[in-house]
Each structure stands twice: as structure tokens, then as C-alpha cells.
Length: 260
Length: 290
Image 1 (cartoon, rainbow over the protein chains, first blue to last red):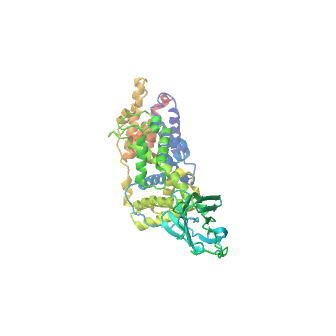
Image 2: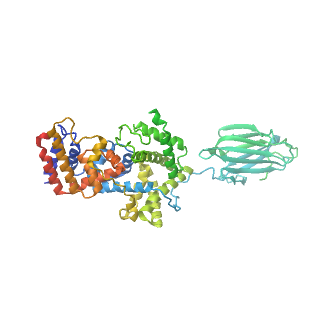
Image 3: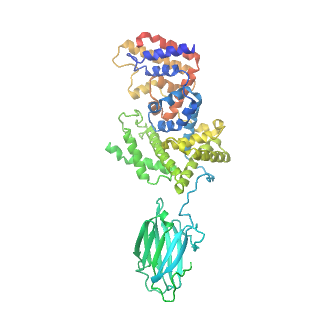
């Protein structure tokens, strides 16, 4: 009986492809063709992974009958996959529903943790060099021999202090280094401030920023500030700030360390 | 085309939709919204102003203005799906980047999945456990997502597969049933201007087509008890309408129309009496159909 009616439906659909009634009876032809299809040839496991993709395209108004003819034919004949598709349609509608839902905390420890330099503690090593210059070098605390002080401290949400050092042997000069992150950018601004109670004016002190990308130099303004914009966050690791504070006094041996 | 591109109303609606969804991953919202509108225009879907008639286009009835004079609900839905698709791409990409972007992507994904799970299960703890399981599965199968624009649907499918008893879950399942609009055949013909028979053909042919359509519609009414399946089947098989047009007429999402149509098909396939009746109907045409 099955083969018999399927053949007659096929034959009727074929006849309806041409002739004066082909247009107005297109729907009837589609029905006859759909019902006359035999058992589904493809397996559900081939179709199932495609369903989200098909749904996204169909929901966006695309012609999925042309884009995914095999899936569409399968959905006409396979109740299990059709119900899967229907369930997904309903789930997506639930996801779009409005109204507040309080979302609890989830454990995302399965995600790989990428080291975020912003979150990393950067250690600093400071040194007075000849000609009244000091340098501060920042690095991750990986090297066991590294000397330095953990200096991370929140200034503001997007501004973080990297170092605040005072050099008693250099007229009590103080050097502060802060980084300011710009939301959504992988770059930051490095703010350096240099001052001393013994100075009348802190302006005009040369400040160098040395990173993997090269050396940039500027001088402090009347408030003792020197800013370096657009420094890649990744360059903070290994960055060196060099400040010419004052002429070295004769009693200061080169290489003596500042205190944090 | 130029007018449509600069349609501030489209961008504004897009923008408001984003705000309602609270999707923080979209940083440059203005440019995001403009891209969506350009995409709509590229697909020749014109954007009618309120109360304005619109030309036929790809979706034919998609642009029919709503009786209230506002843009059609179908147009609004299409716009939202375009936004969703674009957002899925962003979500997918951000989820791959380790670090802050990934955290934000997962936070938004969690909010989406948890809403589904909670609406389905109606229980916070059960929803939380299910989403946790789904998230880990999602991460393991992240690379198997074939199309980033369908990432939200991909995630929803994983959530569904993570639950063994999903199908029976939740009293709230019923609340998402779309509003179904009964549509008379006459109404559709008036709206599309479609005549039931070929214009210009002789009266006998027209009468025959009408008779076949009437009998087929009667058969479908008799053998399909669910009104939504019945109406979609009549519009599909009696009038030969594609699902997208049926969706526009009934103000239903096209994917729902697809489900109704295929459920109807499968029901008819199991109905031996219907098959026999249809065979008689198909046989009645004989060689005159060819």
C-alpha cells in the first residue's frame, strides 16, 4: 500500500509541474511531493548539529529552503529532529523574554586563565646611577633574585600605582609612577611625577620611558609631571623609567638603592 | 536606498533594543546599529515609515505596516533577529579571547542561558546546576560551532542537550506560545492580490482550481485538529505560500511556522484516511493537469 500511494503522489506531483494549473496548485504539488518522499536517507546525527545554524538563518528571514535543502527535507519527515528544532525555537524565545532574572554566581575555572598584566603584581627595582639619575625597572616577580618592593596599590578603578620611591640621598627626591588604563583598549598612559621638598620648582627634569618599543623622552611640567600616552599594556613588563633628579653629591656612591 | 541607509529610526530602534538587552559587549553601539540597518537594506528589505505603504520586496509581506500605523511587528522581529545574529558573532569572538573580554562574554552568555533554564525549570538551584554543566560542555565544544552568527542558538542547543528531562520541564513553557492569528483564505487573497485561479484562464479552469482548493482545505480542516497547524497547512498547501510569507501574515516567527507546517505534514503522513482521500483528489485531475 505504501509504495503504491507514494508512486501515485509522485506521478500527480509530476503532472502538476506543468500545465495551466501548475501555478495555482503549487501548494498541492508541494504537499504531494513531501508526502511521497521515502524513508529519510540521512541520519539524525548528521542533521542535529546543523539545527542551531538553520534556526539562526531562518529567524533572520533567510531562505533556508534554498540554503539547507537537505535539512529542510529531513525536518519534514523526522519527528525527533522536528521536535528538537521546535524546542530550540521555544528556548530561544525564552532567552529573549524580558524581565529581570537574578543570575547566581558560576564557576568558570574551566576557562583558561590568561595572565592579565593589569592584574599581575609588577615588582620594581630602583637604582641611583651616575649624574643624579635614577631608574626604576618593572618586571614580573618571576626571577627569585630580583630585589624590590611589591608596589601595587589601587589609586582609582582604572589608575594604578606602580611605584612610589623616595631617594634621601638625592635631596629627598620622590618619584611616583602610575599607569592609567583606558577601558576597552590594550594601551595605557604612564604618569610619572617627580618632586622634592628641597626644590623650588620641579619642572624641567628629564624623564625617559624605555620599553620594548623604544625610548621616549620628555621633561616634567611645573607640577613635576611627565606623561607618556599610548603605552601597550604588554610593555609594562620590562619597562624602565629613568629620571634625572639632581646632580649626584660626592658622598653618594653609585649604585646605592632607594627605599620604597 | 540612500534614504533607507540614513533611517535614524531604524538605528534608534536598534539602539533601544540593545539597551533593553543590556549587552555590554557591544561597545560601539552606533556603528553596530548602522551595520544592522545596512544589512537590512542590502537584503532589499525597505524600512517603511509609520503608516506608509511599502513596495513588495524579498519578504513580500514583511513590510506591511501594522494596523496601528506603526511598523509591522514582523519588521520589528526581523530587525531584532539581525541584531541577535550580529551580537552572536561578537559574543563568539569575545568568548575565545582569554582575559577580560572572555569574562564579559561568559557573563552575558550565562545571563542568557540562565534565563532559559530558569523559565523552563522554575527552580533556581536546578537551573544553576544545568547551566553550569552546559557551560563546561559549551567550552569543550566551542570550536564545533560552525557559524559564529548562530552562536546563541548553538549555546541554547547545548543547554537543551545537557538536560535529560528538558522536554517535560517547566510549567512556564506554555507562556511562550506565540499569539496565533486565525487567517481566512479570503483575507490572504485580498492582502496579496492573489487570485485563486489563473487570471485570464477560462471559467472552467478557474472553477476547477477553486473546487480542488476547497476540497483540499476541507480535508486539511478535517484531519488537522490543531488550529495553528491547520491554518499554516492551508496557507502552505492550498495557497502555496512560503513559510516567510505565512509568518508575515500570521505575525509569527518564520521558524515557528516551519514547525507548525512540518508537524502538520507528519500528522498527515500517519493518517491513512487522509492519504486515501488525497489520492482520490490527486487522481481526479487526470491528464487535464499535465
